[in-house]
Image (cartoon, rainbow, N blue to C red; front, top):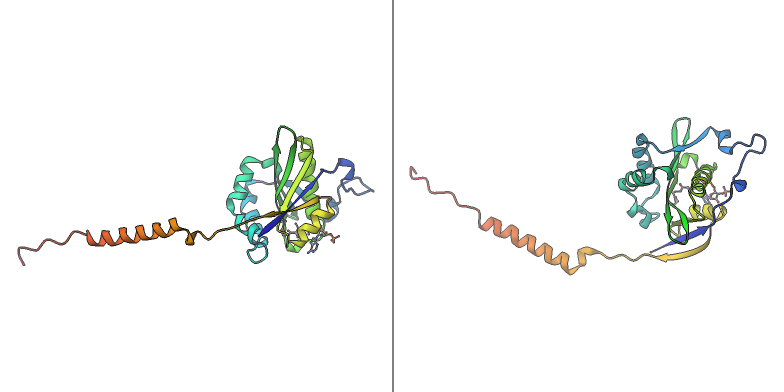
Length: 209
Ligand SMILES: CC(C)(COP(=O)(O)OP(=O)(O)OC[C@H]1O[C@@H](n2cnc3c(N)ncnc32)[C@H](O)[C@@H]1OP(=O)(O)O)[C@@H](O)C(=O)NCCC(=O)NCCS
């Protein structure tokens, strides 16, 4: 199993797509609102992610997506948790983070998802642009994202967005039900259960018969 990691220098403000007539971002044309994620968005975002990150398509992504990804990032990085809304409906989300090292501050896109009913309409584009804008304001000078190598829509999307320097990152896994400790634990639990049956107090004989 592997995933791809892509790096990109964040775009500058001048590179953000705008409507040349109004100077407004293009999302205004399709009634798209990009806003901060709020408490009431947590469950819908989790369920949208659950429908997108499926085990058959992307096993690694699927295994690491759970409620705590949404709750945890909302708790630690709320300014990098954004949702896209069209006429009150959740169209997509992005969950990011910022990592400051002594030498470099970089932004990380941890999760990005767009409702299939709204895909190929520039929603991920707008979400990524807004997040990058915030990250640049907060000092990020580099951007990182990873996904499954088989995830062609995402790889195409990020490549088109300017991410490059694609590297393969290998994931390994182990079935712990085959681990010797697991075997010993099962034996211990079975012996404990057998002992508890054996030690169960017997009924006293009734003197009245
Ligand atoms: C990847 C994803 C976020 C793109 O969202 P989107 O709103 O449809 O993307 P945009 O409309 O902003 O950008 C479209 C571009 O993305 C790429 N793309 C999107 N869907 C694609 C597909 N099915 N096949 C190939 N390329 C695709 C293309 O480069 C496309 O440009 P084009 O239309 O000019 O060919 C969306 O497909 C998705 O939610 N996928 C499932 C979740 C996921 O894999 N997330 C990323 C990893 S966390």
